Amino acid sequence: MKHFDPFADRLCRDIRNDLSEALMNSLRRLDLAPAQKIAERYLATDLEPIHRQYIDDHMQRYSRALERIRLQYIHDDFRRALVLWDEELFFEVHEILEHTWMNAAGKRKLILQAMIRAAGMYIHLEHGNTKGATSMAAKAVAAFEVNRSEVPDFLDLDLLLSKLRRVDPVPPKLTTGA
Image 1 (cartoon, rainbow, N blue to C red):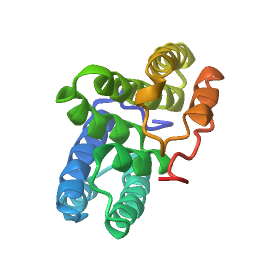
Image 2 (spheres, rainbow, N blue to C red):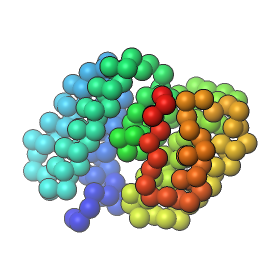
Image 3 (cartoon, helix red, strand yellow):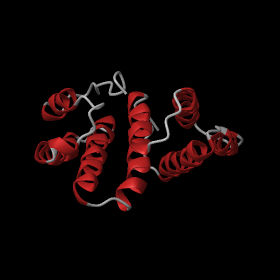
């Protein structure tokens, strides 16, 4: 295996999904232990280097994000998602916002969906799917533009829209003002 691809490999998908789910538990508890437990379970098996690298890399990102969330007393899932975004944990951004999106209504629901799609653009780009990324970006841009007044002030929407319109593979940092 040359690269970690959860779209083509079941073990990659399981590792990604299990770690992400454990991170959601870690965020609820403000404790990395649930994610560490899953990582240790996988690392105790005979994994290829690409799997080990993914786990190690994500655990480092999880640790940094959780520490920032804890130190800054960030309780809002949208703001937490932005911290995850800045760690380029786009699948995890999708996961945390999806739970909030399912219970939202009206324009707030549309903004959450747009943010999920923005993260989806970067998920697709990570795996070389430019067509999927372009589609996700267009849907996100349309929803953000129609519902601009509902976007939280702490999100630099113009910067995000600029990146999405260009399907820019370099994601913007979104928490500088958060």
